[in-house]
Length: 434
Image 1 (cartoon, rainbow, N blue to C red):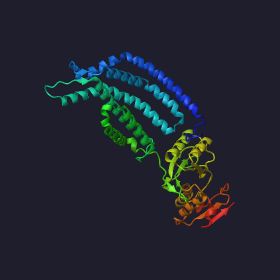
Image 2 (cartoon, rainbow, N blue to C red):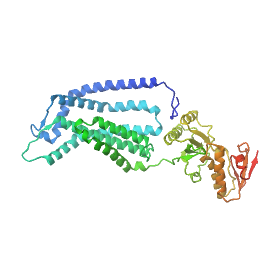
Image 3 (cartoon, helix red, strand yellow):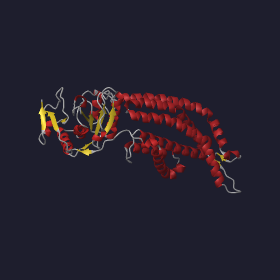
Image 4 (cartoon, one colour):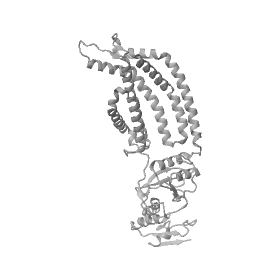
């Protein structure tokens, strides 16, 4: 079925499962091959790492109490090193699989997370194991030793502690990165119950629970709370969190009590139609700037993304009446239960060439009032009537029973063209022309 992404095509679920299966098979084969290679050098890797821990300088200070636990630790290390080595390939396979079904800002978020996450995470892991954890052990040893009492440390326990700390720092880094980039792209709002925010926290806490060793389960709750609030604090410090991408729509109620969210697409139609004065729009109306929504696929993708993300119910285009827009865009909006209409200002003159600024502003207020209630002509006329009665200018209103402006119409300085003139004529004086 058609989806929110304009380029979506109808495919059976088995097609996606088959593609996922092929990609997973390639990754599993690569993982096994790399794991075999790491198995031959894991002893040297452990020797290098243990030599960097200050405790290893004293003979006999490091001990293996359980041969089975040591064997399990070695193979765990082999598996983790194999995952880390194949991670770039896994990220590429994930990107190719997910990219066709993502909206533009979702693609930006995922690509940033994948590239920055792998690079930054790898630097954190290498730095932590090569320098951070040995220094941490040294400080703990100096602070906790008792004169005259010797100490023996289990290598397996040291590895488990280093691994747990690595997971926590890595999850905190990735969580902070995901929240920061999500806020910068307006994928995550200020709502504490934002869906993407909740999903990120849920995944992070779930992974933390899985990777926390049994010996440290008592610290899980404190670690989870630190992970959640720490990542939010770090994300709020970023200048990206205050970045705004246009005016968002606000929820209003129609005459039947239904919730409506209106987005005005201020389209210049390739610099033919002038920009709107956003001050004449209702504060509840969202705004998106476009150059040619019917010709630019990127703008179509951005529009569909905003409709999906902000739960827009009505899209109003300034330049045309909505009919020239691409069919894939119309299908995408229909799949999201969003209607599309237009003011058709490209083909309509709403005030005369000699009109003063007061009449120009009044004409714009009356015309843009239609955008605040696009779901019915009666609702539009009520909004227009309110805009007219709030002004105190002697004005001559002109309309047509055909709702289409006659070709070649020339308005005088005090004349204003209004749509829905038939309904407005029931309340005020409107000159109807053919």
